[in-house]
Structures are given as structure tokens and as C-alpha cells.
Length: 267
Image (cartoon, rainbow, N blue to C red; front, side):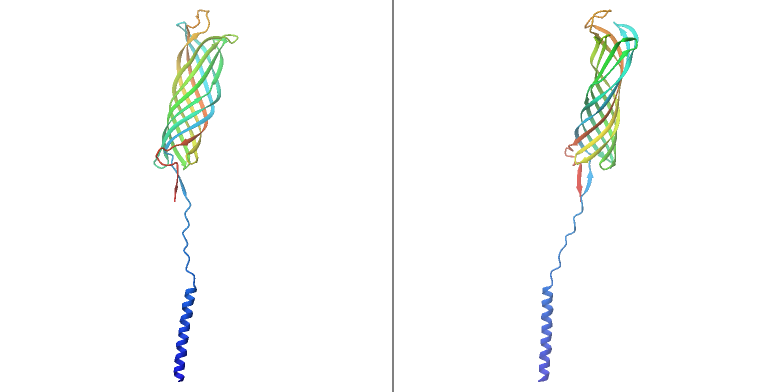
């Protein structure tokens, strides 16, 4: 009898312990799933694409003049030189291609308007004054650049330059004696600068350009009659050398016509 009671107690204890173990396992919460944190985006800059923009700055022009002939007869005379400066501004359009990692090549057209005026007395005739106006400057250049940082470009540029010039010779007292207006000049230009892409597709730049238009013999037309001159008829031929300098700042917006965005997020 005692043996049966002992066996029953043993079995009961085993069942109770099993039930407690099962209940404890059921009471345990499921292990939570933690999603791996997303990595921060890495910005990669792409300079390939086309752009438009605007610029403003200063322009300096130097004019050197020598009379070559008077009324069709050779007559050399020193007509002096002068320098002038003014605020200029305009627009630019171009396309760039980034290659070999940090290198860039591109082409650009830039137009700037403003009236860079200068004047000087003629050394050969000190009572007469030459006035000169340089305006409508256009350049077509190629450029080569290197990315010192993903968003910072240093570059050099060079190509052709064109300008329109007005020349006037004034009599004592300021009355017009003779003139040559709307004279087209062409030459070459070199320059360089730094450009910074400060936002997707947007950049700012600062640059310096030097232009040399060489010498050109320009025929003047008389505004008065007298001293052999006839109003409206050719009067003198004056050889003029022109050089121009620019210091500009500007902003560009890049379109990237299907060539990839200027800034891409990489994870």
C-alpha cells in the first residue's frame, strides 16, 4: 500500500514539474527582430552635362593708336594710347565632359556687354582728343579642368574673341572731327578660374580672362569740311592695337541632358 502511494506521489510531482516548465516557456516573449540601420547616402558629383548662366564683373581695355595715312597719302603720326574700365555683364552657355576620374574638358560661348570708355590727347596734335569705346565682347573657348575636390573645379580656357569698337577724334572744344564706329575686331583669349558646385546642378565661379585683338588699320570718316577734309568722306587711316582684360564672377545651372544628374546618392 505504501509502495503504491509513493509511486503515485512521484508521478504527480513529475507531471506538475512538466506543467510548470511548459507554462514558463509559453510565458517567454518572442525575441524581437531589429532591422539593420540604413547607411547615410554618399554624394558623388558628376560634372558631365550642358549649362547656361550669367556673369558680372569688371572689364579693362587698352587702346594704342598710330596714324598711317591722311587723305590717302602716307603720313605717320603718334596718336597716343589710353586705358579705361567699367562694369560689364552677360551670359554664358557650354557643355562639359568629366573623364578619367578628376579631369574635365568642355566648350563654352560667353557674351558680355558694357561700355569700356577711354580717352587721351593726341601727342602729335595735343589739342585734339581721341575717345574709344569697347563693347559687345564675345568669346568661344575650350576649357580643361581638374577636380581638386568632388565639387571644386580648377580650369584653364582659351580660344577666339570678338569685340565691337567705336572711335572718335574730337576737335578743341569737343566737337566731332572724324569717327569710325561699329568697328568689328577679332583676336584670341586665354584665362582661368575656379568653379564650385554648391547644390545639385548649381555652381558659382570666378575667373580672369585676357584678350588680344592685335592691330587693325581702320578708315575714319570726316564729320566736318575743311583742311582738305570733306564731311562724310574718308579722312584718315589709323592703326589701332586693342587688349582687354576681364575679372568675372557668375553662376551656372547644369541641365545634364540625359547624361546623369550632377549629384547622385549612393548607398
